[in-house]
Image (cartoon, rainbow, N blue to C red; front, side, top):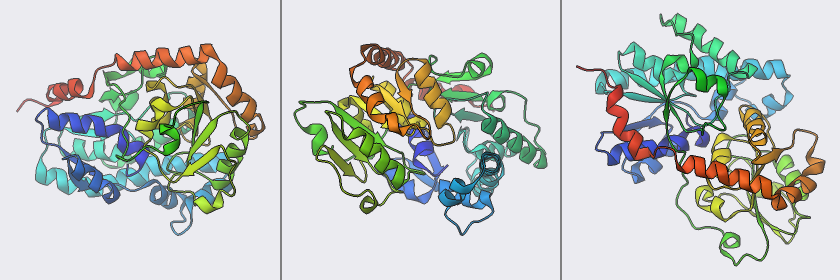
Amino acid sequence: MATFGHFYPLIPLAKAAVEAGHEVAFATGEQFHPTLTALGIEPLTAGMDMFAVMAEASGRPDHDPRETRANATPEELEAMVSRAFGTVLPRRYIDDLGPVLAERKPDLVVQEVGAAGAAFAAVLAGIPVVGHGFGRVSTDDSTARAIVREQREFARGLGLDLPDAQAFGLPFVDICPVSLQDKGFLASADRIELRPVPFAQPGPLPALARADRSRPLVYLTLGTAFGAAGLLSEAIAGLAPLDADVLVAAGPTIDLDAVGDLPDNVVVESWVPQADLLPYTDLVVHHGGSGTTLGALAAGVPQLCLPQGADQFTNADAVLRVGAGDRLLAGELGGLTDKARVLLSDVDVRDAARALAEEIAAMPSPIEVARRLPEYVKPA
């Protein structure tokens, strides 16, 4: 899908495939084409960004999906998300990729699992498919089950009978370490383990990260998709009392002017090179998105999750379960200062985060997996 959290996780394998001598074309939204070109990867156009997908799925394409989402009941929100990933995106990917696959006839399609339509288009064209995850998989989440039901119904309309198995029975490139991954998924999936390698657009680290550290550095982000200025301001207010420096990435959805006046120990940037920043941090406070969750774990940094929707709740639950951090749900932000202060000093949490970092470092590298890709190509 044409959004950062679904695009960045696929970059390491795509780069490695080029290095391994494979011819690689990457289909995504045009906003990401300059990044691909700079990496020596051929860009193709396909898919939609999160705002467009959710707006169309809501039935109100001219309205801000954040507003629609905020006013929806849990049942309405689940139906909207299942339509987005079960029907709207698949239809768009089939329309965009069908002609490309017919013309290019690739040997293999590596499909980001949020874009099931890419797999449907490949199957219809007789091309083998490998799925590629963007984080932890959940088998017991009602929204995830609703998405799969919608996808199967859509596929039946195409004449495809999807197998009743995780990831539709496809080989699955899994960037989530076993300790964090869903146990039901581990028991049933055809996994190709791949080390999650954080990716960020090149750029200078903020001065706060490069300064001589006399006190901890806390990093706050609400991600790139549905961050809200009110929640960000509330989180900043909760972190400001700490004896720490606080670096905030507002992201593309938040106007910096909406954040208001800042305490002396807080710096807000529109964007930071997160992959480069994480090793300098002592605590990451974030929305629970897959990229930030895995990036913090790969850096061995404790985290405090503030989940708002989608897979963020199951990611936060998993972080709590493995002891590498904590979470605060809606209505609990009054406890943010105390939670963060404990996490900055809790040796057990830091040890758990470092143990996850060691587990991640031992996973197969992108170049190792790229060299295996021909195994999944059908013989001529």
